[in-house]
Image 1: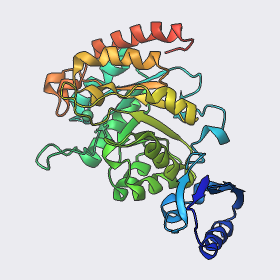
Image 2 (image 1 turned 120 degrees about the horizontal axis):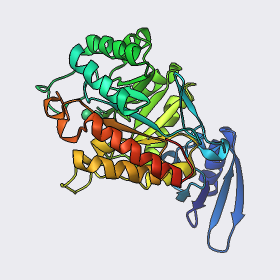
Image 3 (image 1 turned 135 degrees about the vertical axis):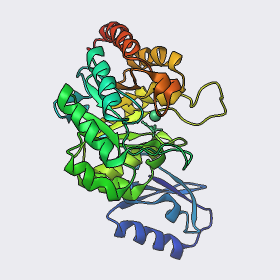
Image 4 (image 1 turned 120 degrees about the vertical axis):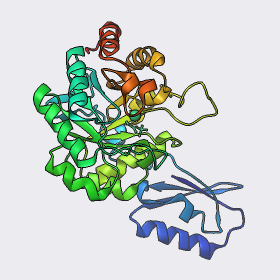
Length: 339
Ligand code: PEP
Ligand code: MN
């Protein structure tokens, strides 16, 4: 970190700044120039808060040289991380994973039919929300605990690990009791810091979606929250961000794949369903994501999308999922991966 001092700043205040920073275990190296005095701060600067440093009136500018996240940072962990979700390995040079399933866990019979379709299409994992974050309080809110039971029945029948969204701390015991394989933290909860800390205390893999309006740095700081509690099993998921564009539900930012891979060792998967909002865009965006280096895809799939209880417009059929996997394998081969 570089701290530039204002011209003519008082020696006493500069001394207070030096003492405050050194007290936190860092070294302050002064570089005296003709016009400006600059401090190079050496040590673990992730403990420093720029805004607090600006609180000293002698400070002109604070510039971070290294990222504020440590555990998620590739600098301190050069090798790609692999997260094992009940035997399905995600990240590094492992097989590109496909997670399929309806938006919501519906009634037993319907969900089982969709799960069978997802299994036969060749997916590796099953998704379905038992607790749903809906924009309207009048919309279907999910089947809750019964939905988790249905999800677990499908897991047993088709031997596929499951991922489902946790919206509130007070449901975490249910997730532990049901032995849920991967907890999804949805876009709307990416900065629910208490929830992040709570899943960080478990050792259950976490699928961390990017918030609707969050920067990559904020997203990696959210991962840092989970990891700093001891749970290093974090998988990032890009699901599109809010922009002015109306032809798609969100704007899919595929550039995050190489960017995240440069800055972090964590696996990253793409959700082309929520990113686009339209079934006909899901295949092309899935293939583009694979080409760009994604470690997996999470695709909303239903045996009858028009009857789906939520997000039918962006939901593909098992046949369409199968076609995406077939084409995806060809793209994966070109970039030296398997799917
Ligand atoms: C979902 O996966 O069903 C979901 C609600 O996703 P997001 O948090 O990305 O909107
Ligand atoms: Mn959905």
